[in-house]
Image (tube, rainbow, N blue to C red; front, side):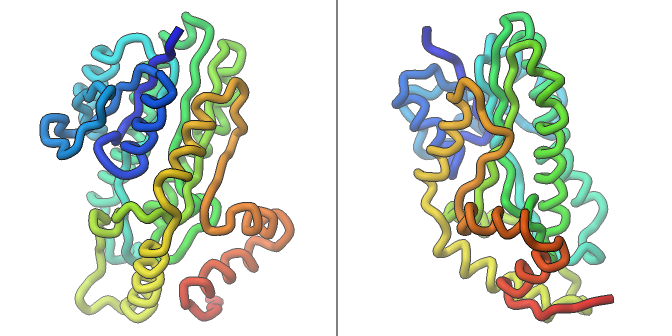
Length: 268
């Protein structure tokens, strides 16, 4: 019997490619978008549902319309960059609402059905910035860390009911997300020099980032696995950098991340 997948943020980027690959595998695919009717190139075989992750009513409505879900892929989210001091609190709160509270609410909405059926898989699409946080990406990194910890802590909780939960951390992907990212820095910011260094390195890395297709394939692998690993990662030399993360002190790893983005070593 074909499984039904609900993937959020399926109108573009990684989400759209994941949806395309799942349709090709013969699954029933439901994809969400804030404005389904405005999708420029809808994917044949995908049924689109409206979802605003900042709106509890929209989340409840989406879950009801989706019905019985075998696999939930929490992919939708927003990106943000700026010095912590310069980033307004309401902007930070909205980011957490979109990247953390919305996906958690949707997960809670589908859990009862999965539990009653005795099976289900939930995939959190995070970021390698969770494992390797970078200056001026603190708010975004924190949201992705929250999602990974949420998944890790819930793993044993859900396992007795046949429900698997895992995280996939993409590295730098060439999706054009930099054009949609929220940037916050004051005109007279004392952080501007270092910020511009990291911003330029980020733009450069994203232009030469991993293609969407292989990254989507990792998400599909996690979603369809009978026993998914807690964490999948691809891009940015993931096998090497995760090995170094296990071997080197945390301070050394943070210094390496900063140096890779053009920042000199600094101590308070």
